Length: 238
Image 1 (cartoon, rainbow, N blue to C red):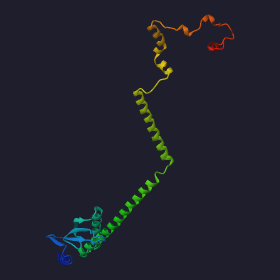
Image 2 (cartoon, rainbow, N blue to C red):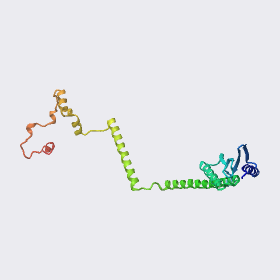
Image 3 (cartoon, rainbow, N blue to C red):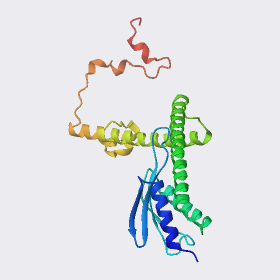
Image 4 (tube, rainbow, N blue to C red):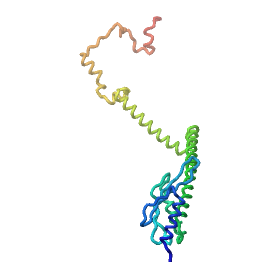
Protein backbone atom coordinates (compact mmCIF):
# COMPACT_ATOMS: atom_id res chain seq x y z
CA UNK A 1 0.00 0.00 0.00
CA UNK A 2 1.40 3.37 -1.06
CA UNK A 3 2.26 5.80 1.70
CA UNK A 4 1.31 9.02 -0.06
CA UNK A 5 2.15 11.23 2.89
CA UNK A 6 5.68 9.83 3.09
CA UNK A 7 6.33 10.33 -0.62
CA UNK A 8 5.05 13.88 -0.41
CA UNK A 9 7.30 14.72 2.59
CA UNK A 10 10.36 13.30 0.88
CA UNK A 11 9.72 15.23 -2.32
CA UNK A 12 9.07 18.44 -0.41
CA UNK A 13 12.47 18.19 1.29
CA UNK A 14 14.18 17.54 -2.03
CA UNK A 15 12.43 20.46 -3.73
CA UNK A 16 13.40 22.81 -0.90
CA UNK A 17 17.06 21.83 -1.27
CA UNK A 18 16.98 22.26 -5.06
CA UNK A 19 15.26 25.66 -5.01
CA UNK A 20 16.29 27.20 -1.67
CA UNK A 21 15.93 30.81 -2.84
CA UNK A 22 12.67 30.45 -4.70
CA UNK A 23 10.78 27.84 -2.64
CA UNK A 24 8.13 28.93 -0.12
CA UNK A 25 5.76 26.75 1.95
CA UNK A 26 2.29 28.28 1.96
CA UNK A 27 0.39 25.75 4.12
CA UNK A 28 0.78 22.32 5.74
CA UNK A 29 -2.79 21.01 5.45
CA UNK A 30 -3.14 20.57 2.61
CA UNK A 31 0.53 20.87 1.69
CA UNK A 32 0.89 23.90 -0.55
CA UNK A 33 4.00 25.70 -1.71
CA UNK A 34 5.22 28.10 -4.42
CA UNK A 35 8.31 28.11 -6.63
CA UNK A 36 9.56 31.07 -8.64
CA UNK A 37 10.71 29.91 -12.07
CA UNK A 38 12.98 32.21 -14.07
CA UNK A 39 14.37 31.77 -17.56
CA UNK A 40 17.99 32.16 -18.50
CA UNK A 41 18.92 35.71 -19.52
CA UNK A 42 18.61 36.53 -23.18
CA UNK A 43 21.17 38.37 -25.32
CA UNK A 44 19.92 41.74 -24.11
CA UNK A 45 19.57 40.55 -20.51
CA UNK A 46 15.80 40.13 -20.63
CA UNK A 47 14.17 37.29 -18.72
CA UNK A 48 10.73 35.75 -18.33
CA UNK A 49 9.45 34.70 -14.94
CA UNK A 50 6.45 33.03 -13.35
CA UNK A 51 5.42 32.14 -9.80
CA UNK A 52 3.94 28.63 -9.69
CA UNK A 53 1.83 27.37 -6.79
CA UNK A 54 1.43 23.62 -6.21
CA UNK A 55 -0.91 21.83 -3.83
CA UNK A 56 -0.74 18.13 -3.06
CA UNK A 57 -3.93 16.11 -3.31
CA UNK A 58 -4.43 13.12 -1.00
CA UNK A 59 -3.33 10.45 -3.51
CA UNK A 60 -0.48 12.35 -5.11
CA UNK A 61 1.58 11.14 -7.03
CA UNK A 62 -1.00 8.68 -8.37
CA UNK A 63 -3.13 11.75 -8.99
CA UNK A 64 -1.68 15.02 -10.31
CA UNK A 65 -1.17 17.95 -7.93
CA UNK A 66 -3.12 21.16 -8.29
CA UNK A 67 -1.29 24.12 -9.80
CA UNK A 68 -1.84 27.72 -10.75
CA UNK A 69 0.20 30.68 -11.92
CA UNK A 70 0.29 33.33 -9.22
CA UNK A 71 2.15 35.98 -11.22
CA UNK A 72 4.24 36.40 -14.35
CA UNK A 73 6.73 38.80 -15.88
CA UNK A 74 7.35 39.44 -19.59
CA UNK A 75 4.72 36.90 -20.50
CA UNK A 76 1.79 37.43 -22.81
CA UNK A 77 -1.59 35.79 -22.29
CA UNK A 78 -0.85 33.18 -24.92
CA UNK A 79 2.41 32.32 -23.12
CA UNK A 80 0.50 31.71 -19.90
CA UNK A 81 -1.98 29.48 -21.71
CA UNK A 82 0.84 27.47 -23.24
CA UNK A 83 2.48 26.99 -19.83
CA UNK A 84 -0.76 25.72 -18.30
CA UNK A 85 -1.20 23.30 -21.20
CA UNK A 86 2.39 22.12 -20.78
CA UNK A 87 1.84 21.40 -17.06
CA UNK A 88 -1.22 19.34 -17.88
CA UNK A 89 0.65 17.26 -20.46
CA UNK A 90 3.64 16.65 -18.20
CA UNK A 91 1.44 15.67 -15.26
CA UNK A 92 -0.43 13.10 -17.31
CA UNK A 93 2.83 11.60 -18.59
CA UNK A 94 4.34 11.28 -15.08
CA UNK A 95 1.43 9.90 -13.04
CA UNK A 96 2.60 7.47 -10.35
CA UNK A 97 5.93 9.29 -9.87
CA UNK A 98 6.75 12.42 -7.90
CA UNK A 99 6.77 15.10 -10.57
CA UNK A 100 7.28 18.61 -9.15
CA UNK A 101 10.89 18.82 -10.32
CA UNK A 102 9.85 17.57 -13.77
CA UNK A 103 7.06 20.14 -13.98
CA UNK A 104 9.28 23.02 -12.89
CA UNK A 105 12.02 22.00 -15.33
CA UNK A 106 9.52 21.86 -18.21
CA UNK A 107 8.25 25.34 -17.35
CA UNK A 108 11.79 26.74 -17.18
CA UNK A 109 12.59 25.33 -20.61
CA UNK A 110 9.40 26.90 -21.92
CA UNK A 111 10.42 30.26 -20.48
CA UNK A 112 13.76 29.97 -22.24
CA UNK A 113 11.93 29.37 -25.50
CA UNK A 114 9.78 32.43 -24.86
CA UNK A 115 12.86 34.59 -24.28
CA UNK A 116 14.37 33.32 -27.54
CA UNK A 117 11.09 34.11 -29.27
CA UNK A 118 11.30 37.67 -27.90
CA UNK A 119 14.53 38.13 -29.84
CA UNK A 120 12.94 36.69 -32.97
CA UNK A 121 9.91 38.96 -32.62
CA UNK A 122 12.20 41.96 -32.13
CA UNK A 123 14.14 41.12 -35.27
CA UNK A 124 10.96 40.57 -37.26
CA UNK A 125 9.54 43.89 -36.04
CA UNK A 126 12.75 45.68 -36.94
CA UNK A 127 12.74 44.15 -40.41
CA UNK A 128 9.07 45.05 -40.86
CA UNK A 129 9.73 48.71 -39.99
CA UNK A 130 12.72 48.83 -42.31
CA UNK A 131 10.70 47.26 -45.12
CA UNK A 132 7.84 49.72 -44.66
CA UNK A 133 10.30 52.64 -44.66
CA UNK A 134 11.89 51.38 -47.90
CA UNK A 135 8.49 50.92 -49.54
CA UNK A 136 7.42 54.41 -48.51
CA UNK A 137 10.64 55.90 -49.88
CA UNK A 138 10.30 53.99 -53.15
CA UNK A 139 6.69 55.07 -53.53
CA UNK A 140 7.58 58.71 -52.87
CA UNK A 141 10.37 58.55 -55.48
CA UNK A 142 8.42 56.73 -58.18
CA UNK A 143 5.05 58.29 -57.57
CA UNK A 144 1.79 56.47 -58.14
CA UNK A 145 1.71 54.02 -61.05
CA UNK A 146 -1.03 55.10 -63.48
CA UNK A 147 -3.49 52.41 -64.41
CA UNK A 148 -6.73 52.62 -66.37
CA UNK A 149 -8.70 52.22 -63.18
CA UNK A 150 -7.02 54.96 -61.14
CA UNK A 151 -6.88 57.31 -64.18
CA UNK A 152 -10.63 57.01 -64.77
CA UNK A 153 -11.22 57.55 -61.08
CA UNK A 154 -9.02 60.66 -61.11
CA UNK A 155 -10.70 61.96 -64.28
CA UNK A 156 -14.18 61.61 -62.82
CA UNK A 157 -13.13 63.40 -59.65
CA UNK A 158 -11.38 66.15 -61.63
CA UNK A 159 -14.38 66.80 -63.88
CA UNK A 160 -16.69 66.95 -60.88
CA UNK A 161 -14.41 69.47 -59.18
CA UNK A 162 -14.19 71.62 -62.34
CA UNK A 163 -17.98 71.61 -62.69
CA UNK A 164 -18.35 72.82 -59.14
CA UNK A 165 -15.75 75.53 -59.73
CA UNK A 166 -17.57 76.77 -62.87
CA UNK A 167 -20.90 76.85 -61.06
CA UNK A 168 -19.40 78.77 -58.19
CA UNK A 169 -17.69 81.25 -60.50
CA UNK A 170 -20.86 81.83 -62.54
CA UNK A 171 -22.86 82.42 -59.38
CA UNK A 172 -20.31 84.92 -58.13
CA UNK A 173 -20.33 86.77 -61.47
CA UNK A 174 -24.11 86.91 -61.51
CA UNK A 175 -24.17 88.29 -58.00
CA UNK A 176 -21.54 90.89 -58.88
CA UNK A 177 -23.41 91.91 -62.05
CA UNK A 178 -20.54 90.86 -64.26
CA UNK A 179 -22.64 88.96 -66.76
CA UNK A 180 -23.39 91.35 -69.70
CA UNK A 181 -26.35 90.71 -71.98
CA UNK A 182 -26.23 91.20 -75.77
CA UNK A 183 -28.62 93.66 -77.45
CA UNK A 184 -30.85 90.81 -78.51
CA UNK A 185 -30.89 89.43 -74.96
CA UNK A 186 -31.76 92.90 -73.62
CA UNK A 187 -34.77 93.21 -75.94
CA UNK A 188 -35.85 89.65 -75.19
CA UNK A 189 -35.71 90.24 -71.44
CA UNK A 190 -37.03 93.89 -71.41
CA UNK A 191 -39.80 94.69 -73.95
CA UNK A 192 -39.92 98.32 -72.79
CA UNK A 193 -36.82 98.89 -74.89
CA UNK A 194 -38.99 98.50 -78.04
CA UNK A 195 -40.66 101.86 -77.39
CA UNK A 196 -37.92 103.61 -75.48
CA UNK A 197 -36.95 105.93 -78.37
CA UNK A 198 -40.58 106.85 -79.06
CA UNK A 199 -41.13 107.53 -75.39
CA UNK A 200 -38.06 109.79 -75.40
CA UNK A 201 -39.46 111.85 -78.27
CA UNK A 202 -42.83 112.15 -76.58
CA UNK A 203 -41.15 113.27 -73.36
CA UNK A 204 -39.29 116.02 -75.24
CA UNK A 205 -42.43 117.21 -77.11
CA UNK A 206 -41.34 115.91 -80.51
CA UNK A 207 -39.10 118.96 -80.71
CA UNK A 208 -35.98 118.09 -82.63
CA UNK A 209 -33.84 120.92 -83.98
CA UNK A 210 -32.29 120.38 -87.38
CA UNK A 211 -29.48 122.50 -88.85
CA UNK A 212 -30.72 123.06 -92.42
CA UNK A 213 -27.35 124.39 -93.50
CA UNK A 214 -26.07 120.89 -93.32
CA UNK A 215 -28.28 119.90 -96.20
CA UNK A 216 -28.23 121.24 -99.79
CA UNK A 217 -31.32 122.63 -101.39
CA UNK A 218 -33.53 119.70 -102.21
CA UNK A 219 -34.50 121.45 -105.49
CA UNK A 220 -30.91 121.24 -106.70
CA UNK A 221 -30.94 117.50 -106.45
CA UNK A 222 -31.88 115.71 -109.61
CA UNK A 223 -33.10 112.52 -108.09
CA UNK A 224 -34.43 111.33 -111.49
CA UNK A 225 -30.97 111.47 -113.13
CA UNK A 226 -29.82 107.86 -113.57
CA UNK A 227 -26.21 109.02 -113.29
CA UNK A 228 -26.81 110.70 -109.97
CA UNK A 229 -24.31 109.62 -107.33
CA UNK A 230 -24.75 111.10 -103.84
CA UNK A 231 -21.05 110.55 -103.17
CA UNK A 232 -20.18 113.13 -105.85
CA UNK A 233 -22.05 115.84 -104.03
CA UNK A 234 -19.10 116.80 -101.91
CA UNK A 235 -16.62 116.89 -104.80
CA UNK A 236 -14.99 120.25 -105.67
CA UNK A 237 -14.37 119.20 -109.29
CA UNK A 238 -17.99 120.05 -110.35
